[in-house]
Length: 102
Image (cartoon, rainbow, N blue to C red; front, top):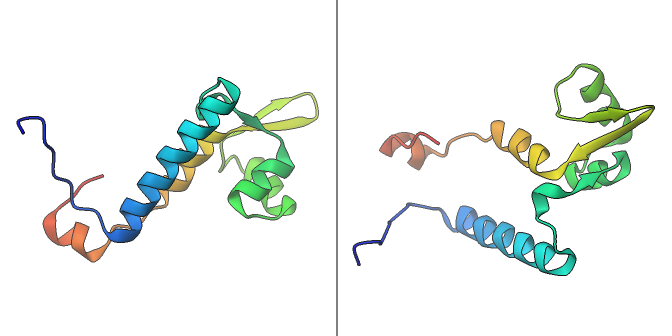
């Protein structure tokens, strides 16, 4: 058991970790590409982030969200959007109490 690592997760955090891992594995197996390799158009980014198109356009114009612009089209890398989302993560009281620094 020398390689055993104990990490305190809430039930919700653990469920999200498993869900994201399974999604990544299924996506990679179905397409042969990793999730990080996927580029989304604006409509797909709206669905992924659950935001309206005007909100996406506002965030890109203010350069508050990672994006790629080719000609008149916007593209979003899924991995970049996931990192962007996690930047807004707030620590739980448990994480603050034990001093976790994500």
